[in-house]
Amino acid sequence: MKIIVLKFGGTSVGTTDRIKKVAKIIAKYKKKYNVIVLSSAMSGVTNNLINLSKKISKNFSDSEYDVLVSSGEQMSCALISGELINKGFNSRSWMSWQIPINTEGKYKFSRINKINKSKIVSYLKKGGIPIITGFQGINNKNRITTIGRGGTDASAIMFAKFFNAEKCIIYTDVDGVYSTDPNKLKSAQKIKVISYEEMLEMASLGAKVMQPHSIQDARLNRVDIEVKSSFTDNKGTLITKRKNIINNKIITGITNTTSDAKVSLLGVRDKPGIAASIFKPLSENSINVDMVVQNISANGNETDLTFTIKSDDLSKTKKIVLQNKKIKFRDLIFDKNVSKVSIIGVGMVTTPGVTYRMFQSLAKQKINIQVISTSEIKISVLIDKKNVKKAISSLHKEFKLNK
Ligand code: ASP
Ligand code: MG
Image: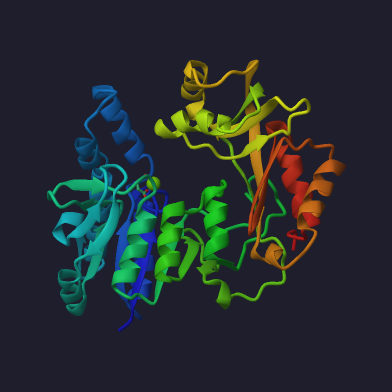
């Protein structure tokens, strides 16, 4: 029998009633497949655990943090198996260390590098339904690790890879990936199929459906993913390789970010090495600089430099820039009321004029573009936060995503 991996997110297992619904879904697949289930913690549980650690200390030990915050998954897995056993199925929960799921890297941000198959394979052969804790693993010191917030997506994808599963289904609270956030724009449409590359851009640029890391894992391992809702029977979105997709749309989706800040250094000396001196201490402090623009200097010796960062990093960034003795500037200004709006689509590779159409469409709405960045399959603009809705709605229409 073929193997299928099912992942249930926090809201899908958020209450005991929902867990009963999840057990029904699992039972349905069991008729046709060997089912491997990965579960997140019940919604809210992981956040509560993190808050507890903060109450103990601001510098709570990383290794104990992983033991603590991964415990929510133990709870939901036991509840799901318990319900399946009640329904007459052969099921049990598996903690990561019982399998084991091996990880490498730092606590809080480990990555799965190996899954020991033997115990799960023989359990499946006996007709069992393993309910496995997502998000957690163990390291080579035999200690519990976690793989980053939202990590159960990546756990599921790695199981699909190691067990050569036919498919990996990610059950969540939305019934697929949409052309843009349906809470912001009513005419948003569900995307039937999307490439890994586009999904990776969408997730990194603000679409919250899946964890970006996990999509990268799926792409590298060629695992097909279906994203669907555990609350409805609607068909979801398939995430697969580009070759499998026939698409006549230029743009697949539009996203926006909600936590960017813009920093501008006015009157910086225009000479070689200045940009490097500004960004070196930021990178040493793990501050991720995203978009960058530097004006050409009108007089040949002074210029303005603007970049964006996560707004959480703003106070740290200010401090670092002001303390930096290697650079001189006239003024430092920052703005938290910005948002990055991006259009994403493999179709733009072969279609000329996309940039123009995007800018024209924003201009018609009198929306000022502050910073621009592009890659092969996306164009991002930084705009005033108050214009995001208007921007998304006009771009959605411009690129015919309404139907
Ligand atoms: N429970 C973990 C979290 O909330 C992992 C997950 O949900 O995938 O981040
Ligand atoms: Mg969660």
